[in-house]
Image 1 (cartoon, rainbow, N blue to C red):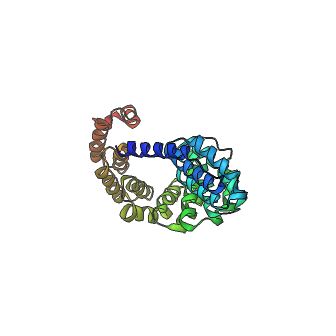
Image 2 (cartoon, helix red, strand yellow; image 1 turned 120 degrees about the vertical axis):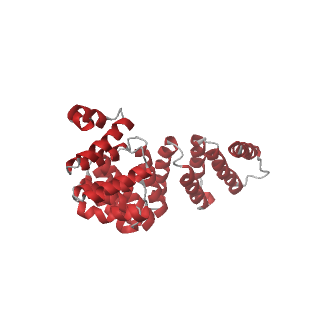
Image 3 (cartoon, rainbow, N blue to C red; image 1 turned 90 degrees about the vertical axis):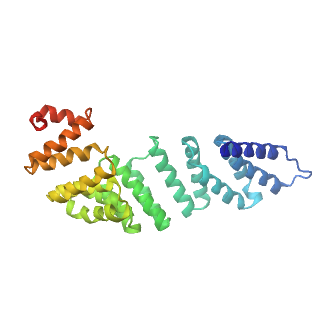
Length: 297
């Protein structure tokens, strides 16, 4: 009901703006109406029309003052990532904005956020990782610390998607050095994938105990203990994963594997029997039946 009311409100507002007629050709007032039309159109999910109005407004900035750039930037920042089409148009807007206001922190931030959003939606943004990183590093200096940390994290995930863990570790460390906190999870994970568990342990321990004590953090901590040969700690961490999320299949299978590799075949069988019963269609269930069926007797 609230969303329906909001939609009707904006429909009525747009109708009102369309019906406004000025007795005198007062340019400033006319542009003000166009500005509010932009907001109403965005709220009505009519992004193409909203950007058309923005282009009309921007073509008249010389005679109407700087408020137009500021207002349009606010609207595009609010609605520019509502969908892929808006984001594509937003890139063009921010390109134009940054020509007008070079290195403006808001413009740089929004340009980068839109690029990362489009990439997350599997849109080809026209950059390789290395080319984008080069441009990224030339402009990230203009971004405030908190925003910069998040953007470094996004770049790190791009490297991670490419399985380039050295680059991912570099970016995640940049994010962590700026803001600490939850950015330690990705840094610890990258170090783990680089087979540097001693370095990853303090980051992942902090995440699991204090910052984001969820099943993912405890799973990565369990994997770290496993690589360090700390069997008891690893098993306890996997138990914690399962207590938080009983459907975390890999935690079940990995815990059974630790028991097995440690010569504790009784507990390995106990855990694996539960795992294959709970996840009969899982690939690891098939592998157990194929490779060591006697472990399930």
